[in-house]
Length: 260
Image 1 (cartoon, rainbow, N blue to C red):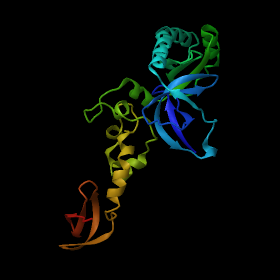
Image 2 (image 1 turned 120 degrees about the vertical axis):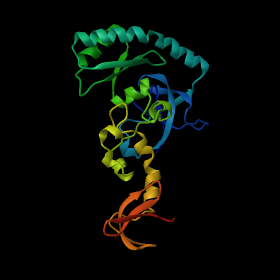
Image 3 (image 1 turned 60 degrees about the horizontal axis):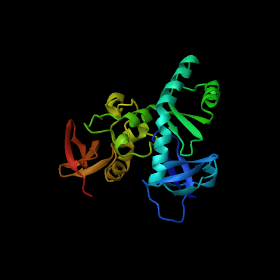
Image 4 (image 1 turned 45 degrees about the vertical axis):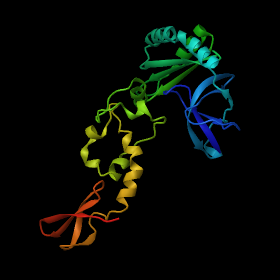
């Protein structure tokens, strides 16, 4: 089932909505259905999900967001500062180990979503009850990861540019050490492979497909190949240069370019 992935805030959960029969594209702002109300979100992607992977029924898009809708949302969220200050006091009163980051009022004003960071699970049931009594609205608490915090506030990466997650990455995918192995970087250590968030760099994931194509053209380490100086054993590979280090004699390693 092909759906739009829509997000109200960069740190909030992704909502899957049905694709309407009128023209919409990634990046468009839309008014979409939420539980007992409506909100504004940005289309961040198209997703083709099997029915069994849908944990909740898909939502529907009500309309393309208009300037009036955006002004209404802006007015609703003028109360965000007071709501955050009040919630922080409650968190302190309940002695909860959580860091409040942001909040979002829905377009229709029926719901407030608070985004927070915590190292583990937090029992915030009493906090939700008190927030509900205080605001007389539906309350959602959305736990975000440390990568979401970096994306929200931004920073400069080791490359000297604004973080990719801040500039253009709409969805944060899982980044594993397998990506480092594909690119031949596993020996560099965690410090050089980690971003400012302390997790593996996002660029390892979105560069992996290029590396897969490049490495497919190279012989494996330990394999035997013929060179101008005779047959040798591949000792190392340079994926970007498309060369390999070949031992053609004891303690004699030459660099050989691999032709496509």
